[in-house]
Image (cartoon, rainbow, N blue to C red; front, side, top):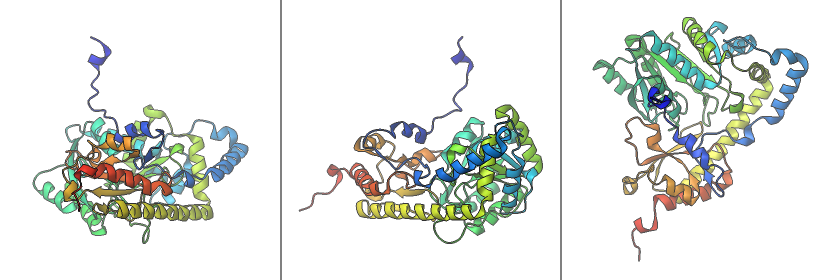
Length: 399
């Protein structure tokens, strides 16, 4: 018996998006796949100034081990800027919000492995699906529409006997659809959590990237709401700084789970993020510039779709990084997963809709990202995509 016979690896799955990044450097490929921040928005100069200042003034401290729960000044800043009253003992700083999600799942499943059902948005964030499967959760998909999770359908399933341990959502500009959870649905969801005693994991990395109106309202306060945050979309994914804001007993349990995982999150990254967030004028100017940049990108991609794929239904969302496309009746039989290789050969990449689903029932959908790449190439990218989705032999003959 070899090592392979001792391992059960069926719970670990590869991300279609990560696999697509292998093709990202292919010559002439225009990628509308990965949800990476625009390189033009990464604050290189301000980060450089901040690093030099930290190393000059606090050199040995920033290069040393720190606390598992996080650097106190960053915890205090995150607690002070939380949408609801918070405190440092509710904050655990992690290596991105993805680690926060994984750690919470580990803690919850360890409490009672028999209660391992998780409600997940359908379609929903692929990284959450992967984390839930890796932690041996059984997934209960609930549909998402323009107003977020269909809480009425969740209510009906709970009434019929569904008993989840948790519900994972992207409340603001959901990945992949861009949906914003309606206020009445958010209130209803919290009431259901309190009635049926399940945890809501509200993962909100896009909340600052509102491109219309005001900053989204957070979920109502409740001990059963765990908020996950990150600077990956607003500052830099390379800093690997995220956090969770949870009831203190759960936060303490997550900190214990974090100790054997990585001991701590980078001291240098944390203190740099604290420095940037505490620079109020800079942070305000920076986030306004982010919204302006992504608003222009969304507009250019939307215009390209109207020009080259006018028959496709587009859910533009009001913020975030993504457009969600549903093919019309003529293309409804087309499987976007099956033609992905053709698209890459044609020089354009996207993510098929089925990558975000549990039951693989959305073959005529796809996600496009406007967050990275050259917006001046969006027109050519969508032109190439149109040639793949509407090949010449599928078009009606015209006199």
